[in-house]
Image 1 (cartoon, helix red, strand yellow):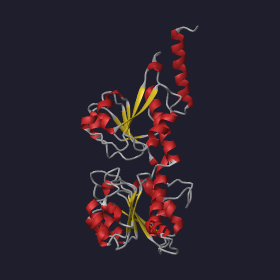
Image 2 (cartoon, one colour):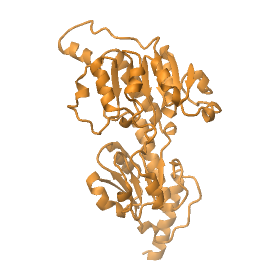
Image 3 (cartoon, rainbow, N blue to C red):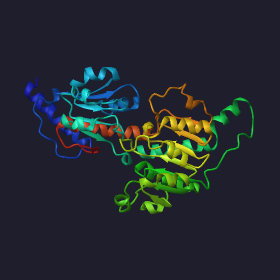
Image 4 (cartoon, rainbow, N blue to C red):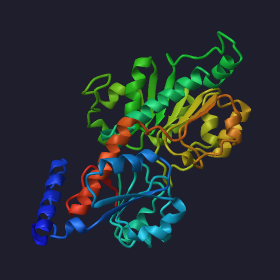
Length: 373
């Protein structure tokens, strides 16, 4: 029978070997002989977006030293103290909750949005905060496709078509084409870039705003999609503007797509003034965060008929109330925050989260994520 120390050393060696086979970069830090007995605990906040914890757990099934738990949101404050890594999802992690996270090393999103995390408080408590870059996981592409879905659904009057089917009416409603429309992409980041690539073949004019174009103008927009692998932003859009131009751009567009990150500067950007500046009958699509839109302004302009249609994958409160007055309008489409929830993107993000958990356990540099503090 093998001695206990030999068994522990062998297990430690195999752990390191498996990590290297997993494709993790960086030098594996030395681990003591009892490292296989050490557990790295990963907390997923709440039951929503179930693919996040299910796919991550599946990815890590061969690594029993990493424990993946899905904890109800109300129970997180009482449980967070025993976890080393947290996937925040839709939970709000404020200073009070973070003060309880005494073992926490890393907080990250299963995606991009970190608007629910008090980053300053996390920094104060020595906890790193990170997002997963959307252009490397298929998340941006998935969200861009969802925008196309919402735009076409509004143009072709999806809700009215369903009514016509139920009433056995043919040849109605009369829809609109995307061909010839002007689309304003407000916030030209990863999702905006992927959206522009997919809009080009529809024969539209694309206008876009961004706070700064300097870095992007110096880079190629790499893609396997049209208009080419070495396309620049100049090939993708017809007119550029800065954030201060959003009202002017909105007045020239048939469709406005909101791709802004939510923060203190962008909250409520789509307000009464903004929607009033839009063309009468123009469509508004939000793939960003619900808080970028002012609820009352949206509701009022739907009632008045100024807003021609609303397509949202994100809402002001989530889950959104299915009896909310906004959903009474035939020209409103809502999806349950599934823009980035595709097999491709969820599997890719589960791999990133799993790899980071293994790296955290091994004490090696964290890769594949963007640390923001």
